[in-house]
Structure formats: C-alpha cells, structure tokens
Length: 137
Image 1 (cartoon, rainbow, N blue to C red):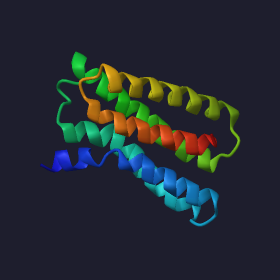
Image 2 (image 1 turned 60 degrees about the vertical axis):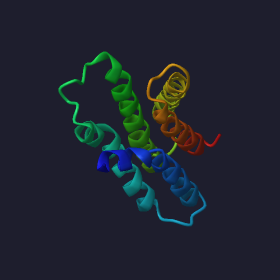
Image 3 (image 1 turned 180 degrees about the vertical axis):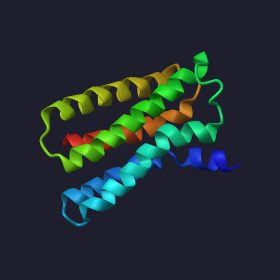
Image 4 (image 1 turned 135 degrees about the vertical axis):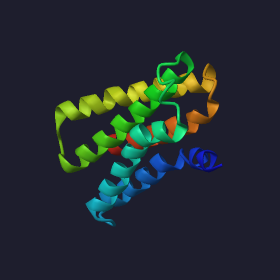
C-alpha cells in the first residue's frame, strides 16, 4: 500500500522542484531550500526507488531495464541541477544537462506510446518542466 502511495505522487516532486527553483530565481527563497529538496529528490529516484520496489534481484530483467534507466536519468537531472545552482555558468555541465534533458524527452515519448508503464509519463513530463525552468526556456 505504501509503495503505491509513493509512486502515485512521484510526478509532483519535479514540479515542486520547479516551483522552488522559480522562487529561488526570484529571490523569494534562499538557495539551500532548493538544494535540500533537489538532493532528497535525487537520492529518492536512484538508490531508494530501487530498494522500495524490491526488485534488486531482477535488475537486469528486460522489462525493468527501461524503468531503471529512467530512474537513473531522473537522478542525473536532479543531481546536476543541484550542481548547476551552486556552480553558475559552467558550459560542460550545461551541455551534459541538455543531453540528459533530451534523453528524458525521448523516454517520455517512449512511455507515452510504447511503454507498458504509462504512469511514468507524468514523471517524465515533470522533469521536462524542471529542465525547462533551469535552462530558462
């Protein structure tokens, strides 16, 4: 029951991070609020989500590989957004962030059309919103 509740609201984490980033840019909130939330979000999406799903034994199962890859992309986007807030105007990190944003868009398209887990599409859309906010698009 708890696993379903956490997964049901999973899409709202990147949207909340986008709102926090917007408030950070408008100087309403201090920088550490976004850093704290995005760090927790990145920790949730990679190691904790694997442990909550309880499928570490089937980590290389064909159907689960795309879900694990999506979690890895979520982790990289959230962690690199933390670094981008601290280190401003780093060209190499911005390019890496843009590449993983494109990978996220492609995974979102995959889950909206061919994926068996269509409930992951809102999470991908939330991360698209987050990357657009950080890149200033």
